Amino acid sequence: MDGLLERDLTILSSMTDAQGEHSIPAIFDLFEDLAAEHAEKLGVGIWDMAQRRAYWVAVRTRVRIYRRARMMETVHVQTWPNVPGAVKDDRYYRVKKGDEVLAEGRTEWIVQNMDSGRMVKPEDSGYPLDMEHWPEKVCQGPFTRFRETPAAENLVKTYCIGSQDIDTGRHMNNVAYVRMLLGTFTTAELADMAVREVEVAYRAACFEGQTLSIYRRKDEEGWHFLVQNQTGDTALQAVLRL
Image (cartoon, rainbow, N blue to C red):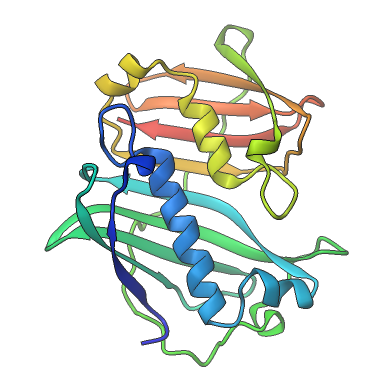
């Protein structure tokens, strides 16, 4: 059915981390790529939207990890959108090995007008509202209402946004933030972590040449992050649940 995109995928070496497992940023990459591919098939891909002077924006993402696939393991991947709301749309993702679910994801999206920056309603974006939607939902429950505030003792790193972080929207790519956050840990620290969920809230677009301040603290839930741009505005908030 049009509302579901699925295919088999081999986890190649470029998608793995130092432990030879499907890396967390690569899982985010995979979900982003699947969304772009499916949107193209539905007539609302990046070039279709550009003709309408609009673009997709990820607002919040939640990824749950049950087991990370190993290098050269073949998995089955799926993505499907929820029936759109008034201005927002959830898209879901899944990675499976046979009947075993390895990872699931949910992203809340909006469409913005390139010129005004205002949100575009689904019926005005070209989205096929009459499409038969796959009914399943994953990663349910309210998204986290982040209340982190920056504290000087939690400043762990500053990061200058380079060309490698920029996507076709000319701003920092969603997954580049995840790589940046994980880059605050050593390889040994990451190897000792059992990350079961990553949740990210994107607050403000960031651009090449800007310097970001990364605040990080740990509690019984896991690692909490707040990222500020150089004017002190919050660019992103996130949590790695262990």
